[in-house]
Image 1 (cartoon, rainbow, N blue to C red):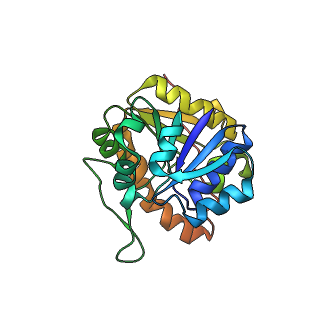
Image 2 (image 1 turned 60 degrees about the horizontal axis):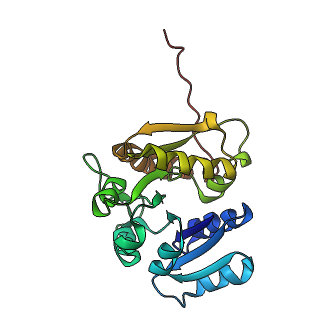
Length: 220
């Protein structure tokens, strides 16, 4: 499958590399087609890897991963272009974290809205699925780095789009029992807000290699 990965940072590189390992043809998108990080990723990957602008990648991809920094996400997607995103599953991994005042970060959007919802409103013809945004990059693409089961949340308005996203998540190593469908895209308000606690936990634990598991009482 042809997949676009928008973003050249740690998350974008991890997602793009894992997709190639899974047999997909991946185009990494950046603001500048000559982006050095994207070129270096292509050189290190060698096969089934290309680089281009955000629009180049989104046009080429049947599925689009948004791995851009949350504060620049909407601008990046505008550069990708509504026409290139139309009808496509847009898997959003971004978080609206604001580090302008240092640590700990705050959220640029919260409570009554989320970045996931903003993306869906800005690109109504895209099929936005929020997932993987509650984890460090290494665990996103290899959940078995942690012992036992732990969860990854999925939300979005389009059931078929979520099913497509889950297929790729299974290729990454996620078990069906670990994929928790929270319903529509509004659930991104909660998963994005989790990052405030995630940052504190990373400091307390001294590592980003942790995640949640859910324990629920049996249904009556």
